[in-house]
Length: 404
Image 1 (cartoon, rainbow, N blue to C red):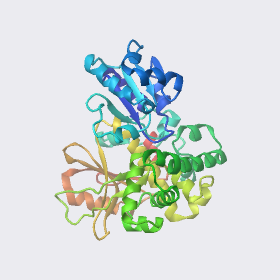
Image 2 (cartoon, one colour; image 1 turned 180 degrees about the horizontal axis):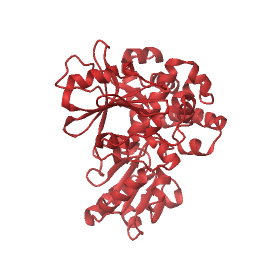
Image 3 (spheres, rainbow, N blue to C red; image 1 turned 135 degrees about the horizontal axis):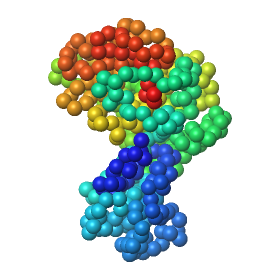
Image 4 (tube, one colour; image 1 turned 135 degrees about the vertical axis):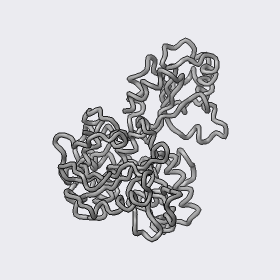
């Protein structure tokens, strides 16, 4: 998905910055589109760009990939000046840390460099299915057929534990992935965190990260989070900002509608990849262990599905935005609300069940009846093998529909 999007953008835009969590393959993705590669984390290559970035940039075969651009931050100003002088498409690709532009009050890339987020790999990307985003298929009323060889519940959990970080997902055994993920968490909560904000206590930050991850797919209060980490509210706010800047967490805001009153405002928290949740929970190598804990199982499956949906957003023709819905009394809630143009709504429920019935769709039925023609469709994604109609405008479909 990222490759196709990059091809389109480079046909029209002069400069693209790839962002995303560490180890999601930003450099690997960019390499496939570059005529010249400059690795600025190598001193020999960076020296000229630090001394005179405009001169060093001039005359290179384009597109030019400036990898780890923050190691020579002056290069961004040179890119700006080059784009201002000649704004032809397909000139520059930049990859690296988000720290440098976060540290600068006036970022020179504004209006010249377009950001594209690289998410962990989806299952569709791992199996090479090249599928149309599911939200586009639902919006068009397409058939939601399951993928060939649709997994059972254990199979879905194994896919979630494998995760989407390219290196462990595509080339490691479960034991190797376990050690890689443990190291990843340690690296993010120590070195990356200190690079972003010097002076942070890595042990307290690691406790907050653990509390956040274990509440993935939940709506815990801020107090629940900082009490679990043993920190005060001010420190918790700083840690939350740090995790957000590291792009390792994401959130679904509460959905609102002028047709509904008394909706909750709590944000739903997610870690960007279910493999990190499994690692922190100690189940990274054992689907059976994850399945023995019903609450953890639900969090893993929902985190896994939302990660697939989130990765499709940049290429989704419907230009959907994702929310969740819960009323203040907790009587009605929908796992994911996808809002399309003209405020049309697709509701999605995610169930670790193989044969969902009307009761599993009761919140979608309520939402459909409350908002009328604003309700486009409802889908109950489940772990069984079949797609079938549950009610008017509401379908049950296997999770594998995401990559069918």
